[in-house]
Length: 137
Image (cartoon, rainbow, N blue to C red; front, side):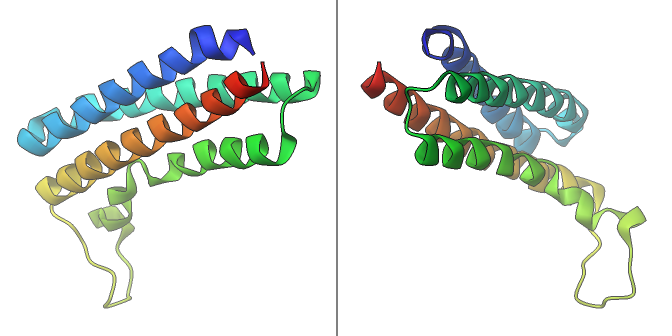
């Protein structure tokens, strides 16, 4: 548990802050969209490390299983929302008239806004896990 509280939790918070700032920068300057994709890749890695650490903690026992597993699933479930604008990319065209095709600047703005929202949600999930682990230890 101390590994999560001392290393992983601050790392998730830092990665969330970087993701939020990259999303905001992309919203302000669309040309930074490429940098946002690199930050998103790094955020995936941080989330994988977070999930693996929590699984190890669960296997060792001593934490509430149902709540902790729920928050692990929440942390992982946020990841597909990063890069959600790819669904509106021109190469994702379909015959469905209700499926919009986005312009390049729209894709960057949607990705930036999604990154900001996911950064806040991921930080909250990590905080809740840290609260649960802190109460147990």
